[in-house]
Length: 297
Image 1 (cartoon, rainbow, N blue to C red):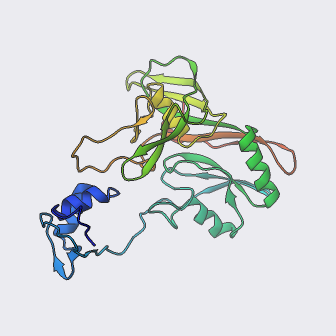
Image 2 (image 1 turned 90 degrees about the vertical axis):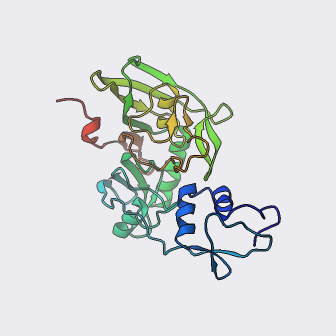
Image 3 (image 1 turned 180 degrees about the vertical axis):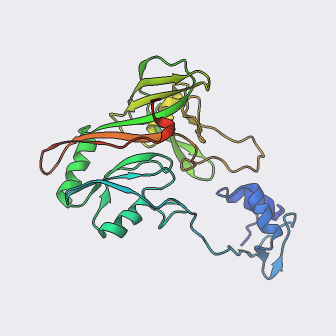
């Protein structure tokens, strides 16, 4: 029901201003298509709302977006399961993804027991560790918390004017973000974070560099944020701009703002080294990076 404070605004102004999970243009199209009604009456984007109006949004049936569903099993001892996932496959159900996730695919093969010990971003490919037993799950949680795992990634970044090796220690925390409430970004009041970067190769003709990144800490989107904060965002980075902050659309823009799950960047979880929490064996896993993240032969 339309409250008095909203009366006098157009239907388009109301929906675009109050429900920013969709763009202004999307709400405009829905109004033109007759998906929003006042009682039984179809309304236009320019329809002026009155106090007490009852509005109904007739949302079409939800369809889950397509995503790659494959994964490769690299190791399985009954307690620890290590798999490789492709870019484009989300680890856990969230937002528009429910079944097209790595968790759903893994449990389709191994039953309901395996649980991921950590996450990779939807656009990040490579190694993911799953726990298949309670002791292993507890042990991995302690290892991640106390820095008992070594995690190494490869990334393709913008620019060639990097030092051969350097560290980034920008704190990472939540910042307000339209349509989502918040996203993680470089934030001085955030949690301590550390990334160790080493240049593997430079491509001056394309003004980009291939780097290896080790992360003793594991904050959400840490590598993407830290490399942007260092002035070298990932090639194809849709969200993070210089300073490690999310880029924003111009005011009055109808374009959808970029989100953390958007694809296009080049990042791969290459190596993980750990002590097995149950057997105490020293383990090292490697996942070959995609072609864009390999050194020339």
